[in-house]
Length: 344
Image 1 (cartoon, helix red, strand yellow):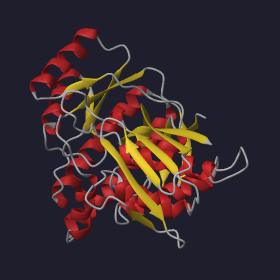
Image 2 (cartoon, one colour):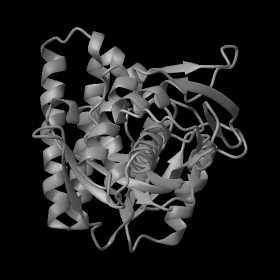
Image 3 (tube, rainbow, N blue to C red):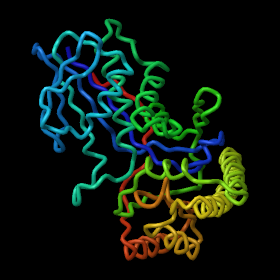
Image 4 (cartoon, rainbow, N blue to C red):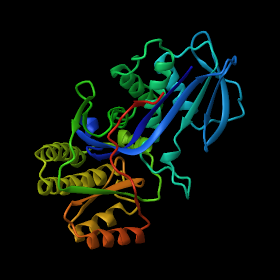
């Protein structure tokens, strides 16, 4: 028995933080994929390996379905996420399984740092799908909403209940989506507007979404903070309306207003979303007639620049050079149309 599944990374374009308050987020799947393979070994234990990242670790599953690690002296990097997915899927295989968790495309080759495309959410989605499929006798098992719900539950538990689920939704659906937590974590497919282009840049500095969400949770909200939150929610809805109109000029204008609302929200909540060079890059983009913004929690990781398709190549080249002077690198990444895929 051998089953494989893969799911893409993500870049949250708009709605970060506001999605937690019921606003829609726009998120794009990115062409780097987490791949999981589950195969029978015949051993009396299970084992897991992450190629290029971690050596094999072994565990057993008790009668109650709990994981007991055999090699107590070995800390496996995805141990916590694996446990949460295992429990969310109700896995209790009596036969030994070898789990191969490959997230190498989410790391920078030169520095070995994570790029910020949501490796844990992509891995949670692919691992959930592979374990559900491996535990079923029907070829179509695990291909529907149950995988999304289980993966979301596992990933949120892994993050101590913090987050909206937009990252797992993007990994599951692929392409470009609008996502809302209410009702029922709704996913709506969107189209990329003709005449609008983008490029993804990496700051070279890792950032922790979980840490910023913890900070947001602890923050004492005064009147100014509440007003900033309301403006960000309104700006998120305005961008989605403009996006659906498919007019690049209107989209770019709405993104400028959204950026201003996100900046004020960051200041009033002490989040530092535009730190790590993001603010400077926003100003450089303004000079070029582009719109740049950090993706997701900000404060590092990745950002995205939007520009009209007819923009001069020299303008984009100049922007890239100036971004490089700030320590940013333009990544050769684009939108991934496919979401969760069963590969074997």
